[in-house]
Image 1: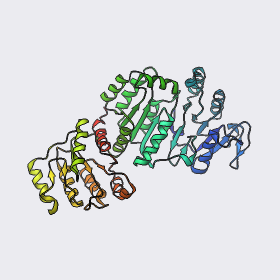
Image 2: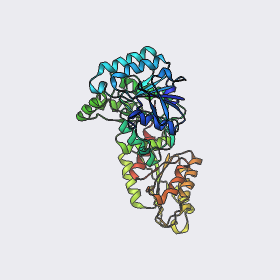
Image 3: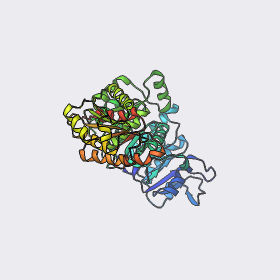
Image 4: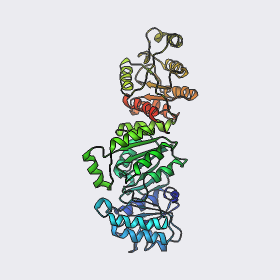
Length: 455
């Protein structure tokens, strides 16, 4: 099946648009695409009428041009007929927003729409989903546009069985500066599931990192997913729910999925070098790190800070994750000490973590970073910055990330995320270095690079 029309539609038909109920999900989808996106959108409802000054077509056959993407937001019982109508009109793909299928006990109705689509090789996402969001191109989410918090365009694509989990993470992406390529809510995944979308996104030039929120799989799907993901060649992050008995029951009632044996699934992810996020904090940190750096590391970290307490906390976090913080040889320490500013030279601790103390200035950070990046024993540098230290300027992020770029090794920073420090943070991010608002988050970014080892 050709999935390109789902993500790059030039024309879209929205079924269920109402001339009287302006808050109907279909109306939200129709209006936001009409006003905010380049896709050419048509409304369809057998009753006709107008909405936003646009005529509502009584049938897809009345639309004067071929439809790339049909968005179906009608009562579940009507979906088979609408799907058949789309196929007869030579539409190329669909998202079935409507609920009321297997998750509501109507498995026969779901099997019916799958059979219709399979016979015609007609791809659709859903049912019981939000569908597709591609920044600056198309949005089938039925959420009001003014209430959506949208991340910047980037290279992370997110596939989720839960629309709510997906939207929550887009909000977090926006807050943490993680850029989005595609967001796909698959709901019951009656036809297209994780395997199909993995294959598509693996070839998608806009996608560098692929994220999956998974509730469960059908028979034998889990094994095939792990094996294909391990061979994908792109970093893959998985967040799994249904780990407990109660969570498994909740999964079944939500999207009619089988949660399966979590312990076996988690072990398989690790075996195939797929990064599993235990929770939302890990997921966001992993996304930010892997969207910046795709090359795996062994996990040998050099730490530079101006606070001994921050350095100690970072050491504890690294140790908890099995990340090594090598000691600096004496000759390296002495060479570095000579390159530090006179006010810091005699008081800095150069053991790793390197504590430049509250007297440290930009040049001291740069000299330290150059030393750490040059060491074979170090494959990643962690910079713990306190922007309120007097000698640090707003340019330090740009200076350090430039050193990292020249070295070819990853740099990860901790900076408190408040508006006052935005220019410092931007200096890192504009040069591709991820920044965390917590020490634990910064260490998790290192952990993602260490665990990303696809077969």
